[in-house]
Each structure stands twice: as structure tokens, then as C-alpha cells.
Image (cartoon, rainbow, N blue to C red; front, side):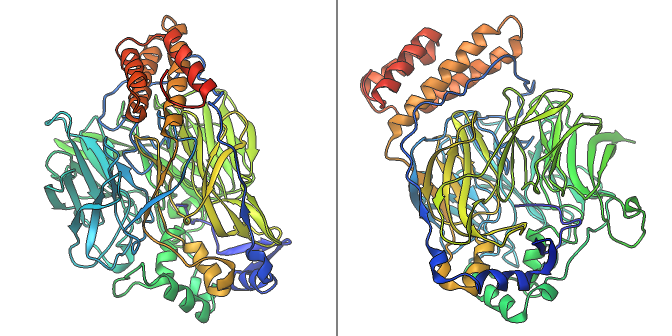
Length: 637
């Protein structure tokens, strides 16, 4: 739910009239009877193998960056380019599994190592920790890195391969004033100051670090636009001092004027078991940060692993809106490059694109770095080239959440907004809207509506989403969730294939581990307002990290084998036309077969997959896929 607050106001249009948030909330909750809390999740049959297939040549990255594993969710949006895509399959059957660290909130995403262990940074926890490692199978804590001074909390960690120790990985965390490198054992490799100072108001303004493969460097940007760059191996500062983007602070709203003191106090009390705010920081300040108000940067950023180009969505300079008043009413996409200047490393602005209404999303790149996708604050998805020139735009009708999910196949893009999920295909000179769907997963009560809660993840067999039942008035821009769950959408049609209710809302991403299971961090900010005004309408808030589980690992085997077959067939059909693409496809085939082997606990099945891993054949995979699809299981073949 990270979005730029350039012209965003906490007001919603109701029947064409603009009303304050406190009036809008009262209109909803005091006009809805107790019956409104009745919503029932729909029951979906277990889906068959996905009919979606790759076709033709795909854009590929030519670098081996240590973060482009594709089968491992390594960063806030999967990889350095923010694709929100994994090459493995999502389990087609799932239900809530373990919950860990239930006293904590996670406003960003979790990341994984190759063994599906989980790493996250809690948001202002009561315990003095900044980074926690969890066992991926049980949720038990492996270790925790203590905080220094205030318990600050921040964005997502990042996991990279360790080039000096093949087979090992390192977790990196970038905070406002501190950055760390930690081995998966919990051993601290380095712990350094970033060069930025910390105050209560900026203590959660860095959403994490990204990786520049060309410079072998870690990069982070703060909410005020300050950028620091560190050597990956040592943590040494590579810039003589942090450099700042040229944007001015965005338009800010005073939430205290929108909320009654009584309501604000109620919500703050409800979230207090999870948030231990440092002295000088109020609950309204946290909402300002979550909604991206009054800052230069309210999103993450993308790095092209081939060229090293960095793309930041931020505010434009003060004068860009025609009025020099200390704030920016428009936004911009900046391309920045690391250059050598007089024997020193510096950041140089290469190009810029200004948006009317501001930018509302994290920039995302196509795999080859030749396309940049971003959304403005008015619901338009825009495609630009690497010179910041706009190529096309598609109006989705509603402000887009966070990052656009970018598939490496067939030009597919998936945009998430409060009420809809939109599929767009990049046709080169134009974008084509293919479908727009509401994730219809609940039988709703009176005055309720189907909502989409957060961002999307592209998997080989579908789209992972968090949907819910919400409440709003007609014409309201943002509904409030009262119940949520996780689901799988068909990539071709947008239909819900499977859905499972619970546990709570997140405001960031749906992370998928190498084992094919979803993990989210609970941060029910919006549901806290529902709870404050009408407690009977929704359950008490929950915190922690939730992993979803499956009773049918055999179905993961089925879907992984079938996805591998279609990928291999496409690779072999196009190996003369596009050899780089075909080699990349064969790499993904190996990742899918490794996932299948992980869940194949039968001797004959495991042997069949092992043989295909050594010598992949389209006919062998096709026969195995057909048998698994016919039997509906991953049993002996």
C-alpha cells in the first residue's frame, strides 16, 4: 500500500461530494446494522493444472546478479527490478498455517533464503530488535538482531548469494542511520552507520536496500530523497556524502483535522499492543508515513542489473507545478546512474519524466531493462523507455497500489487497486487492457463489497492476491476491510481459482517461498478503524508473520511438472529464433523440477523427476504431467 501522497487527501468522494474522513466513517458505521458483519467465504474446488502457457521469446537479463534467482523472493518486490514475479508455482490448495511473532507488525514484506527460511523487520516492536530470522517449516525464531536506541523498525531485508562462499547467503538490512549484513546463521558480517541522521519522524523512512550488480553495491533511499550507497562486501560508504533527489516535499494533510480526537485515541489504543512508538512520534505520524504524505519518496525503487540504472518515483521539484511554495503538487520518475567523477563515485541524473497528479507506485522494470512501468496518482499505468520517454498509458479507473507486477512472459502486467485487479499486455507501441476483475471470494452482507487488499504476485500457475469483504458508501474511493483471505487467480481469465479465509490484512506484498507457500506480515491499519467504531463488525486485530500451508503437496508436484513441460516445449520451439530466451527458459525448467522434487515424497515419483532433471525431455514431462493431472495427485507414476 505504499503510494505517493502528492495530491492524496484523506477524503473520499461520496455521491459526488467531498466529505471529511470522520464524517465518511460515521456515515458508514452508524448506518450499518449488526447484520453487516456477516460475510462468508465462498468454497472453491481444488483447481486443475493451469492452462496458461508461455509463448514465443521472452526478454531476459544478461547479468548474473546474485538476486535474480526467480525462484526465491529475495527483496521487497522479489528482485532488483521489482517484478513481483516468481518462476515457481504457488500451491493450488492452501489454508492458514503457522503464525510467528504475533506481538509484532510488519508493514513491509518478508524475504526467504533458498531453504524457505523467513527474514523480516518488525515495525516499532516492543522488543528491542530490528531483524528476525524464522524457521520456514515451524515459524520458530532462529535469531534476532538487537536495535540500537529506539526500536525503529523499517522496510524489507534483502537476501543475496555470497560470492565468496558458494552455497551460502547473506541478509542485508538498510535502516535510516544503520545498515547491516548478517549470515543466515545470525552472525553479523558488518554493521555500519549510513551517514543519515535519525529522528522520530524519519525513523521508518527507508523501505529497505536494493542491489546494484554492476557496482556490487547496496543502495537505499529515504523519504526525504536522500540516497546512500554502500559497498556490499564491507559496508563502506561509496559516496562522499548521501545525495538527494531534487524533489520537494509532497502535499501533506493534517490527519488530526480529519479525525476526531476521540477516534484517533481509540485507534491508537487498539494498535498499541503491536506498536511501541518512540518519544516524539504520534500515531498520526505513522499514518502520514504509510500514506506517503509530506515526503519526497514514498515508494521503493528499481535497479536494472544489466546497466546499473536506478529508477525512483518521487516528487518533482517545487517549481515544476508552477508555484514556488515549498511543496510539490506533481511527481516525477528519475533515472539515476552511478558514475566516476574526478576519481570519486557520484550519482548523476540521466533523465526525468514528470507526471500530472504525481506518481502512485514503485517503478518496475521489464527483465531486459528496456521498459519502465509506473502508475500515476489518477489510475493510469504508464510505460516508459530507459530514456524516460513515455510510450503509452492505460487508464485502470482507480489509483494503483504499490508496484505493478511484471511478468517475463508475453508482455503481461498486473495492476492492483482497492476494488479491482487489472491485466494489461504491453504490445510495444500501446498497452492493451485484457481484463479487469474484482476478486469475488465472499458471500457479502448488506452494504459490503468485494475488495482487493494489497499488491499481487505472479507465479507460474496463477496470480496470488489478498482479497476481502469491505464496507464503504457508494462512490467512496477506498473501502475498509472487515475480513480477508488469500487467493489464486487464473492468468488468462482473472477468475478466482482458489481462496482461503484469514488471517489478517497486510499493507505490502504477498511473498512466495521456494516451497510454493505464501507468507505475509500482518499490519491491519485500516481494519483498526473498523474495530474502533464498531467492534462487533470485525474480529480483534492480529499481528505477526503468517505462513500458509497445504494438505496437498502432491498438487505442487503436479503443477510444477506441468509448468516445466510447457516452458521446455516453448524453449525448444524457439531455440533458433531466440537462444538467450530459450536458455533462460531451460534454467526455469530446472527450478520448477527442483520444486517438484522437494514435494515428491514417493520413491517412484522422486526417481522420475530426478531422471528428468538430468535430461529434460518434452515428451517425458508431458507424459508425467498428463498422468498427474488425470490422477489428481503426485503419487507413484
